[in-house]
Image 1 (cartoon, helix red, strand yellow):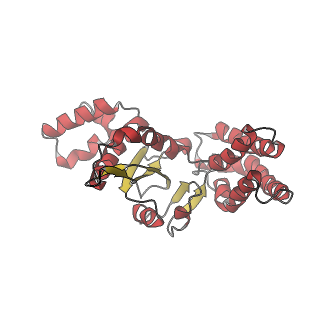
Image 2 (cartoon, one colour; image 1 turned 180 degrees about the vertical axis):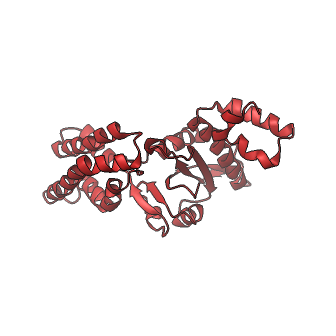
Image 3 (tube, rainbow, N blue to C red; image 1 turned 45 degrees about the vertical axis):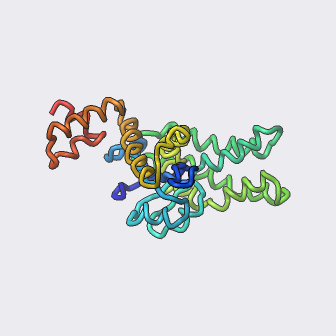
Length: 274
């Protein structure tokens, strides 16, 4: 995964049992995902989870040690401490803050911000699946003027608002991450948001109450391994139960260690009859 050109990262709570104390404690599953299909990359889609007992920057540094590519993330400060990757931030997270304000009632500034962000997504919908060069050219011609108009407009709105308002907070959040939010304009491999990893981590969040079989930190590590296989199967259009059953049977039957890569989810279909 760390040899990939672009990775997405996110993290979610993963409670585990705390042996001897009769209760649970808070662990975290960190997800690293890749999916180059929107820009025609050759690497297969995959997601790898890593368990950690915390959410601090030290864990991000361990999980991403050696990665020098583009890292797409939300605005969590731990990622901003990383020295290796080039960070690209998520327009979906910025949009969400304006959406919550607009949903609560009449909010013309938030609604206008949503309209302007939607125009960026409209361009992306048209160029999805194109090669990086085409995506870059279209973004330069169509998206860059939208982005360049948006920043001074946000700054002008901010100057008129109470600094303690939710709208001011949403604008400050967007402006604080501006360089990373704008990075997609200059690289056709970058996505507009982190939805790739958001989709991968959602099943973990939905299932966390049912996953308390993780009886310790070690159990959390095992949970991460199984989750990696299951969610990577889904990304490669495989039924996880069918895949895992067949792979375990092959291993028991003596599948050659030298050909273990044939059993990876992205290679499995091509080698299913071998």
